[in-house]
Amino acid sequence: MLKKVCIGVLVSGSGSNLQSIIDHIESGTLDAEIKIVISNNPDAFALDRCKKHQICAMVVDHRQFDSRESYDRQMIAILESSGVELVVMAGFMRILSSEFFRAYPRRIMNIHPALLPAFPGTHVQKKAVEYGVKFAGCTVHFADEGVDTGPIIIQSVVPVYEDDTTDTLAARILKEEHRIYPQAIQYYAEGRIKIQGCKVFIHNTHRLAEKALHNPPLTRF
Ligand code: GAR
Image (cartoon, rainbow, N blue to C red):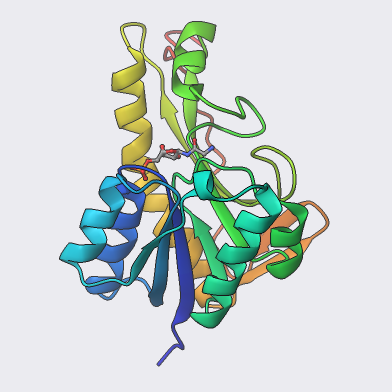
């Protein structure tokens, strides 16, 4: 049997990605164990999810620290004492310090609701609708010190329709987030991820059929 990867999940809000990870662990499709969930927000709904599933959770409120470094030091101490090997940011709306990256080099995953490197930052579904892109999506990547940068593990693409609002597009993307985040963690658990420079190689994946997508669909060509 595969050894479970010990993860620590960082959250700030609703925690629907956390829920998807929990559900996949409980159904046996994800070989991971959540050692600890840390929220910077005491009111995060993610904390209710932890209670319901008897997962150990802690609030580390950034407002009670005088610097980013001291905040991160506290988080590192908790993660290390909980035996976390992989840090999973799931809607964690804070930038991490260099010290954090030194503590968990290439062992911090993040999910972002856009096709990186397009649309880093915040309110990206709104920006995608306003820009008029025809495809959007989500990305799981290893975080580095930039904002939403670092080696990309997996992406999912969704169409953007002419009548989309920020909410309809965000919902379509979120559904895919819930599929690709557990998959990325499972790749890690299976030891199939190799990082070379800025690229991630997944051992033993089959090659996607070479088929382009068009939106709107081609009618004649
Ligand atoms: C998700 O859409 C996630 O991709 C995004 O926050 C949301 C959290 O939802 N993260 C970022 O924008 C990070 N740059 P959740 O709390 O329901 O998982």
